[in-house]
Amino acid sequence: MAVHLTGNAGLYHVARELSRRGWHVMPTVRNARGADLYAASAGERVVLPIQSKALTKRVPVPLGTNLQALRSQWWVVTINALSDRPTCFVLTLDEVREGAHRGVNEAGKISYWLQPKVYALEEYHEAWERLGDPAALDTD
Image: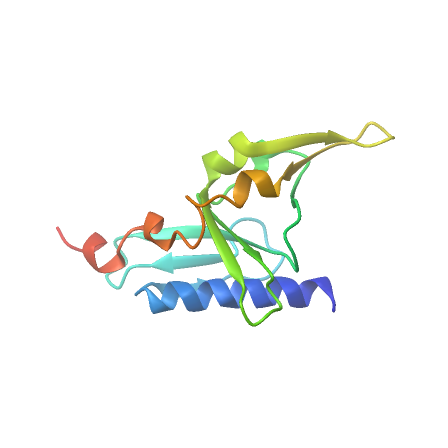
């Protein structure tokens, strides 16, 4: 299957999970810089930018060549995105940056990866509560 189908499957799974928990979800234009989707509380007092990374299996997540270019405050890594039972891990941007592995290829090009041993932890596993309760976030 094409890579973009994996990405779409993961993105819409994340949107479904957020919607089930009371968030209003707005996907962005695919391949645009920044967040892949925004989750807003009903009163729009809280809007969370979320980066979605979808994988067909438990493998490293590519992060690019510059960790400072990573933007979205929240990251959701979905493994087994094309299966009937995808699994999500919810991390903050700081956790992604802190856990990033630096690699150098034969040509000397630097790239960063998030290894499964860093993202596939129990504390992040289906940890949607880390985003907060959208109903409670709209109260004064």
